Length: 393
Image (cartoon, rainbow, N blue to C red; front, side, top):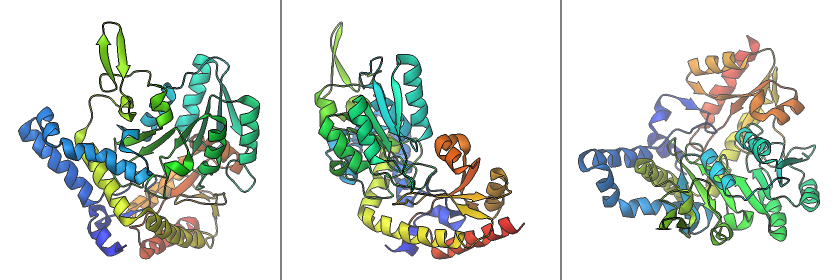
């Protein structure tokens, strides 16, 4: 990858050192252009008319997302976020009182809350598999719990937002496939950061967002839906005219592809911006992106380990481009403000963001540093120098 060229094509690189890619990456000019050109067309042509004129490019989003995940375009739906994708997928599972949902301790906060909401409303049971001492879900314990509870749904967050590890989604997927269990994978942080192959994961749903490591716009996400879900005619709770045909006064028929999970009204400027972001990631190569990120993260982690007063919190055999750090004697808001005043973007994870994990680590907050391929070694060194000054003050 030509890092200098990629940075030239990223306006934000001129003013910020951006290590908050797990929150929202800096968008490249190609993404901005795609959205701005469409909005300009819509402004002079009309909303419906612009969508008709750009129908081929809009449809191209589904092909681009399918290439990213190694699936078919008919298995892709556009949504507003990974959480929105997750809720739509969750709403189609035919839960009954006494059903079990199996998940991991490290799963994302919004997913955990959604499961507890289902428990409150429908009386489903929420069961969590053990975590390994080295970090990450214990696959053997998950297998045991599958055989014990026969869960209606198994869910796993591929890359948890505040723990820095990569979960073994492929191993769990194999177990689910052998037992014909519905399997929902949260790929919010993994899409655009590491290679993701749906055929290897064997999931029924995979949720993603564009704003993070894919470097797309906020308010844009996607949902992979398996052929099994489509053919069994499982549908979101509030299906609309996008997802179904009204055939008689009291009957409708769901469409036979993933777009039954969409709403009729879509933000087409964001769809085209999302396509541009995905196309860039695919052109660079997800393996190349992963290797570049590993190089940067190794440099960050090695430097942090040398700073007195900092403690690396990340566990797991395989670690992601999310680095979490404990800073003794400091408040999160204080550290965030000091770094932002030096034009360095990071973020803070509060205890309730990863309650079980942070309880085990005995921390109330953590600084989250998330490099991406367009960051430079010099920027890493500037960050490390700034953190040395923070701990020394």
